[in-house]
Image (cartoon, rainbow, N blue to C red; front, side):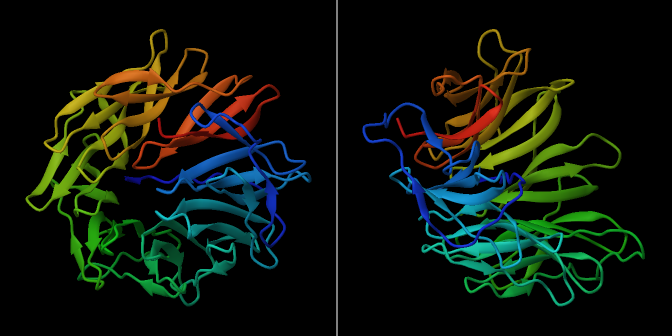
Length: 393
C-alpha cells in the first residue's frame, strides 16, 4: 500500500544500535501486542510496518529523550542512532523487507533526512548545495527515497535520494518556478513507487501549485486536474495510479485520481472533503470527510470511483481512516464524544473493533501492511503511550 506517513517529534540522543528488549516469552501473537519501551523509558509509538512485520517508530529513554527505534519480527526493540552532534531522530518509513528505514534527525536546530540500513548504521541523506534542512517522505523497494531539501536560492525543492544517499533535484515544470524575495516557496516529492515514478507538487511562475509526476529518468509532467485550479499529488501505486487533491478556483478542495485515462474527481456525496490517506495496488483509495467541528467520517472509493462511507462504532461520533490493505480492508479509528479512540477495521464496509492491551484508556491505529498487520499506539494510565501491534488475523 501507499499511505501518508506520520512522523512524531521528540528529543533524541545516543548513537548506535543496541538490542534493548523483547516481547515476553509466550506473549499472545494474535491479539493486540504491547510492544513496550526502551529500558527506563515510559513511552513508545509505532509509525509504520514492513511487509515482513518489522515495525518502526520512536521511544523515550530513561532520560526522557526520544529515539528512533525498530521492533523486529520477534518484537525485540532496537534503538536507532542519530547523527553526530544530534540529539533527536524519528523513523518515518520502512521498505517492504524491513531492511531500510528512513527518517529525520535534528542537527543545529534544523531537520535533516537520514536513513538506517539493516545493521542500524545511520547515513545522512545529502541536501542540495546551500541547503540547511530537508525531510524524507517515503522509500521504495530499491532504497530510493523522496522528499524535499532547501537550497541556496532559499526555496524548498522536490528531491530524490539514491540508495547511497546521493541527492537529485527533481526540478520544475517547463517555464521555471515562482520566486519572491521573503516568501517561502515549497516544492515537494511525496511518494515513489517501486518502478521509480515519483509524484508531488511544484510551483510555476504565476505562484500556482501544480500536481506533477516524475518518471524514473527524471522527466517531469503535469497531472492536470479535472478543472482549472490548484492541485497536488499525494500517493502513487505500482500500477501508476495517482491520488491527490485539487481546488477549482475559490471552490472547496476535492479529492482526485489520475490514471492512464486522465483525471477524475472522487465524490464525497456532498460532504466536505478533508484528506486522502491510502491507496492500494488495486486502486482502492481511502480518506476522510469533515462532518462537523472536530468530527470526521472515514471514506473509501473502489477502482471505479464508487464511494463507501465507513461510520464509527455504535455510540461513537467520529471515524477516521488511516490506511488500506491489499485486500481493500480499511483500518482507522472510531472516536467517542469524549474523544477516546478505538482501533477498528472495516471489511466490505462492516466495522470490527481490533481490541486493546489490558489497561488501555484509548487506542489508535497509524498504519497497516498489505497482509493486514496493523500498528499504532495505546494510551495507558498516566497518559503514557505504548506502541501496539495487531498481527495478521
